[in-house]
Length: 281
Ligand SMILES: C[S@@+](CC[C@H](N)C(=O)[O-])C[C@H]1O[C@@H](n2cnc3c(N)ncnc32)[C@H](O)[C@@H]1O
Image 1 (cartoon, protein in one colour):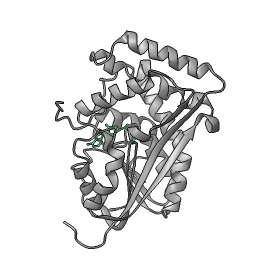
Image 2: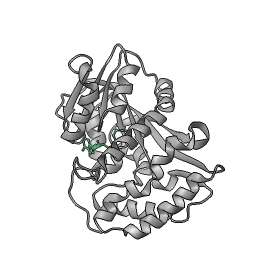
Image 3: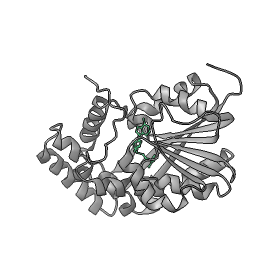
């Protein structure tokens, strides 16, 4: 398989055929997972005066939550895509210059001096990088000694579940996984994160699974994640899968969503580690 040398397998601004859908999906995904994510951060010792880096912050929905979580601290959002940074500025702008910094740059080569954060979060970013290990080394540099890294990401082998089955779902997920890999990403990155964290100089590694489910939140809250017509539209545009096949699978999804007995669970992993005090590199 040929891979490209793009900086990220995520959509650049202007690339997604349905950008409003994708923005809404990111917002829903951020807000529905956040209460359980926050609980994990609190268990990991989150303090109100921490200086936090949100690396690969996208449109800033998690950045806003982090600002609330550290009312006496600061949040720096670092994002590769200017357009997504502008989205973040559109709703977080009033905080900028105070406790909030919005910065354009790459997680693999951040335009920031080292040793300035208590917590660095890389949420759903590593799966988009061709050099995730380099990103973890860079995040290690940016943390203060004893500072904490949290990588929130997925692994397609443990993405969640639907009941009853949607027959074409595995096929479309496998097609998306190959497409993302061709763009330099890796939807199996989750399993590799602990080893990469150790190699980058992190210790005290923990792994927590965080779930959201239709049974807790209602099917509507999660339904956007099964909108294969919108989510896979770039794959159709690029000829990776046919519109007809997507329409068939969307019909199966619609039947699933209309069934009051259906259950849908989505899973994300929070990998955490502490920057070791000594020099490691
Ligand atoms: C799926 S979005 C997640 C956004 C946000 N972290 C969240 O959880 O909602 C992935 C984000 O990572 C950004 N990204 C990808 N590669 C990056 C890099 N090398 N440096 C900084 N940001 C990057 C993308 O532009 C995109 O905004």
